[in-house]
Amino acid sequence: MSKLVTKALALCILGLTVILPSLQAAKTNVLYKDQVAVIMYHHVDDDAKSGGTITTKLFEDQLTYLKSKGYQFITLRQFKDFMQGASVPHNAVLVTFDDGYESFYINAYPVLKSMRIPAVNFVITNDLENPLASYIPSLSRDEIVEMTSDTNFIDAQCHTNNFHYKLPDGSPALIGRMVTNGKKETDEEYKQRVIGDTQACVARLSELYPEPIDSYAYPFGYFDARAIDYVGQGGMKYAFTIVPEMATRDIDPMQIPRINAGNSMITPEVLHNSILRRIVAASNPSAEVPLAETLSQLGGKATVSGGAVTILYGSAQWQGKVNGAGLTNGTATVTLQKPLYTKNNKVLIGIKDLETVIGAQIVYNPTVQSYAVRQSPAVKK
Image (cartoon, rainbow, N blue to C red; front, top):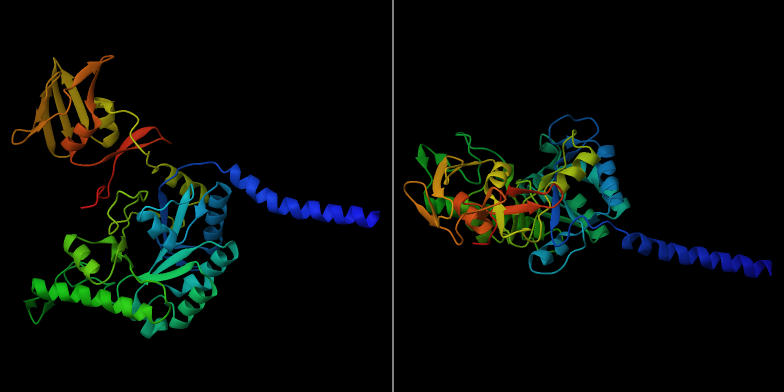
């Protein structure tokens, strides 16, 4: 009988180990869905001090805290599938690293591996030739091969082949124009330089593991329309910025935002709150918004005097009237889809009309219950 009881208890315990994770997952607090918080790191080191360095303990504490809050970590492949229309788990997070430092292998990778958390490291492939010669030692070929082959959730992608520096005039190598013997490179020379560097990065990483090399992080976060075009021609389909916003499907895949996590002042709680402040509602809660209140949240100002409406945003000033169907700034006129109108002593404007006036997409954050201007381009060109 005692053997039967012991066996029954063992089966119960085994059953609970299977059931409890499912029950816990069912209780996961849905903070957001159908969007991804892409978080960014550089250097994980217990001795170095810089704005882009955190300790191993803080790194582990951040990830542990995010897990406890119900965040779910995804692979780069899952992220790319999401951008193409696939679903992702609620509270999805993609972990990214820039610069390909060896500290990723020494300090970050053991934490990621033990916690089964995916990550992608954007590597400067020219440093692969002599990884210990860098000011901060870089990943070696063998280390990249080991990490990508021992797991199915660590990725290495492009941070250029050799563009992680600035030209003598201070402009980043990716977007600046080189001057050789007093002669500035032509547009065609610049184009071929960017395409060639991107293709070199792809070729070097492709030698190390079989996953597609099609993702890129802009050096220093700088890019422009031409750089985007030529990096794309070099083989990139996805590119990551340092604009601190959530990633949704309606953004340009060559301008993916990321939220900084790699600073010693960013505690686990601060990182959690930083993500919460950037959640994007699936849709705005109302087609019309209070003009003055909403503009104040966006960093502008609106005044109403005797039926005359004045909108100040950036360097532009717009004039209109209550019940009027247009706004003008003296040189341009915007025809409103719906006239300005008053309700409960507040002037209301259509959200789409307000976006047209300020020239940017407006998003609603349900966590803080306020509107904000989306910094990154909102619609694919």
